[in-house]
Image (cartoon, rainbow, N blue to C red; front, side, top):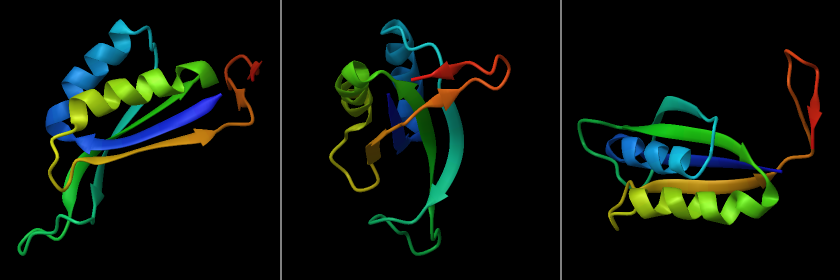
Length: 100
């Protein structure tokens, strides 16, 4: 199991979510985040992006990363990042079911 965390431009979010849903990804968490990176403006010390977090089986991590990259890459500073992390296990709180 992998955790994919992507920080993307707000303008890219709709297309990313649409294609992830079309690919059968049923759940994800999306939050508004503020960050400081390469792109810092004089009167706005941080940029507002969206963070997408989702758990996927190991074999789907590359496919999901590719979908996110396809819709978030502009080649400009501030495009964001995609991180893929291993997950030892997940427990559904409601059912107490352990997912590996």
